[in-house]
Image (cartoon, rainbow over all chains, first blue to last red; front, side, top):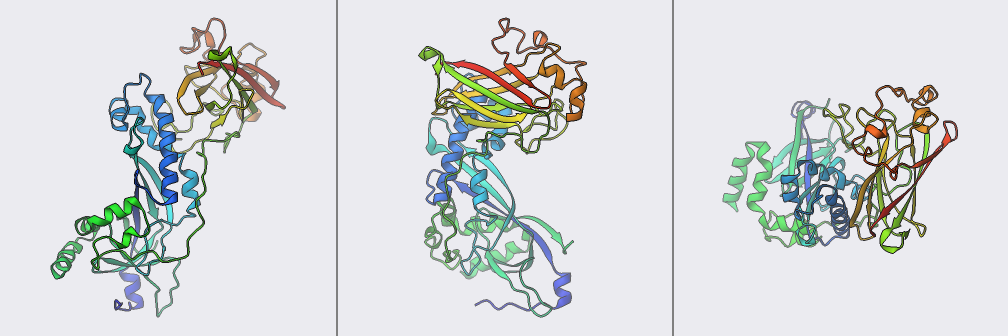
Length: 183
Length: 249
């Protein structure tokens, strides 16, 4: 059990940093979770369809070759995102996979961005996409080993006690933005 | 373990370098994150640095959801003269019979001549890159018909009024990318909507500077008017477009 030093009221005000996290959820052909598989399949189908609009001479099969040779195809990141919008909405603003150290999902997202990392219209196994989830603002109180001690703005707070979460630093999970104090 | 802690502490002095740390110490978890199974997060390296296994009540089971492009009412937040678009797809490889199951994407500009998914550049200064209005996808019925509810498109410099259409077969293979042109006589919907009667609906450009089909770089070679749709109706009742597109299905 990690000992948490209680912050004084003035410390809480003075030392607060407000951060937003980004979780870059990568989904590839090895996806196992149902949601991941749906997003993988839906985005691939949509990409293959819309790829053809830019691949007018059927010269390219990979996403990399297409955007290199047809710069306008960069729009495919956004255009294909329409295929996953419904799935993102099903998450009801809960960032998937990222748990606090009690094993519970606790972070909500307030924005997301879809990106195509790689793909091949002739080989679905080459399809790799990412959904970047941007978290709601959280208060970053301290860093303990590889854990960040944070509290959500919605967490219960009194003058005596702030309820907190420990979240582990991990791959594809990063601090997206930082600012001092609550505006 | 101790050296790893020291390593982490050294790193944490620069708090913004946070993501690098884990890439260094949790390689196994990279695969667990991407494969996304609940169990793999706990089967990584077995060291204390692994994330805990999620242990909470499962959320609602995901359900298969069509692309948000799949909609018949494509107006979203756009206003204008009511407009119904009926497109019939026929198959030249089957005696021009109706092609059912074809996927039809359409998109057109709003009453002011702006497209969604574009903008911030010379062609269209207003930035609508992050919205999808006036774009939709439907699948043809047994009569080869798709119907969209929209608003009458405006126009922009250099082009006649038009609707973009991309037709795919049921497997998603592109069959045809084309555009639909509009009649433009003085009593046509284009002239009426962009005339004085249309200003009450927000169409303020008039017809000065309008590019007619004969001068349009896409439609000027359409000497038989094969690309020109039939448009009927009125400002108050709305207009209905009917057009047939032939593809090699």
